[in-house]
Amino acid sequence: MTKKPVIKRQKEIKIRLTEEEHQALLERMEGAELATWIRNTCLETKLNKQRKYKVADPQLLAGLGRIGGNLNQIARQANTVDSDIEKIRAFAELASIRSQLQRILDHYDR
Image (cartoon, rainbow, N blue to C red; front, side):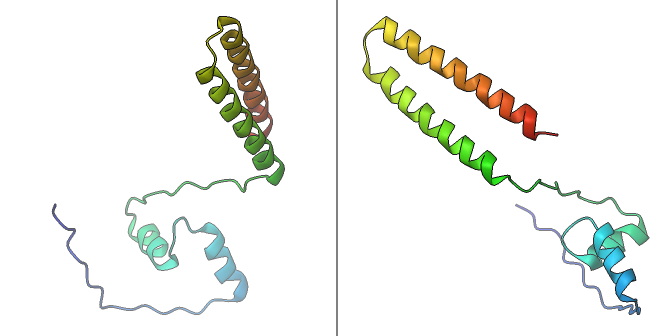
């Protein structure tokens, strides 16, 4: 495996900003570090954009946890029964859970 060459930056630029200007820069930057964002923006290099994830809704997480528990119970039941009727019931429950998950996804993925 080849390592990336280390870039040693020795030149330093200092600027003074108002609190509002500094906050505006922080809000615009994409990535982890302000210096990297400024360098990429000013020198027009291509950014490795990081995904911005939404904050998870506690109700959504709780609902998904309950559904996960139901899935585990159904999977355990489906693996232990020999009756075709019971397996069909388990598959029907799985279909119901799938539709519930789709409704949740449609509601929260806006």
